Image (tube, rainbow, N blue to C red; front, side, top):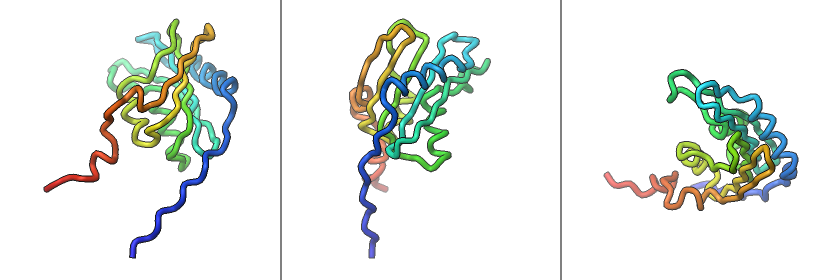
Length: 148
């Protein structure tokens, strides 16, 4: 007999946007970006209200670097958190920037309808849903109906 699925609990209210903005900006300032000089910080909020900060870490062998968003996902997963409510990212760009394609793909695994807020040092802000940024995504559901 198959066990009944566990009911999903409602998301716990996390920190307010102003707090998350400051945390993402602070993480951005700690970024290691000597090659691109494009610093990014992230504050990822779990459904339980926990927050995981991270920054991008570049490497001379460019593909070996890590984006702030994926670093935040790794930190959260390492702490047992796999459902997310909000992601606030800060970058050194003049205008708010969305996550890169690889980060979008990594995020879709855990939070298809994730709220994403991008902020800049100069106070600009943009808001998206992950589904807007990655329509028709390849997700875990894509693997449900395979044929042999």
